[in-house]
Length: 247
Image (tube, rainbow, N blue to C red; front, side, top):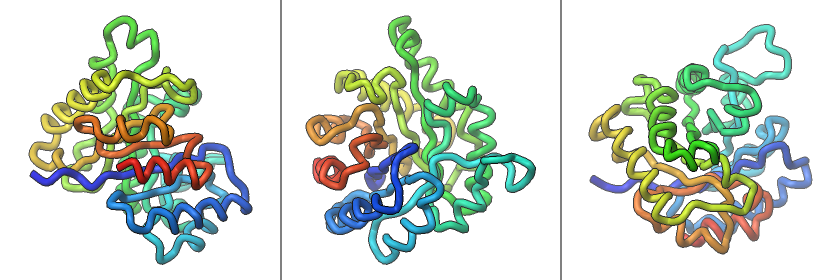
């Protein structure tokens, strides 16, 4: 079975204004020949402008979250339909900052995945353990449980990816060992295969957690790592391109 095409996605989180579109342009120019799929997920207020700026390039634009409902009295929230209408092609769902800070459950993440599918968005579904769970030897059980609970059966045959992000490594400068990353990614692959059969081989499993140009090559060439979900290092074209070129 052919390996999935790698995906390198940048999560800008709550960073970026109109002037930041220059970085997006530079990323598009510098990644034009990359074998990877490349995406940038900016704040919602930049999605439409970024989609216009990147039109005709290989770089896809994504959202950082989507409401499970299509519309309603949900002040401040954004629906999958709105993201698609603004030009997004992908959406990050279940990020650890949403799971922890907003108490999002696996069931809620799964309902958001269904919303993304309704509007033609490719979900990037995040899973990962906190440090206490890692220390207690529960990481594999926690993460594979999140995979089963967050991915609805309707994903069968659809384009999506899973991003493994050890919560304790995000923004801390800490990273698991290559062996720990490979162990987790293999466990996720086995779980995906149980759920989706042969189709699971086409699903990229991304690594997210303090990915930088200096450690990207080692991470991206680890077994079952099919790309990266990049936080702070995706805000500057030079850094993000360093990671993309590490493939």
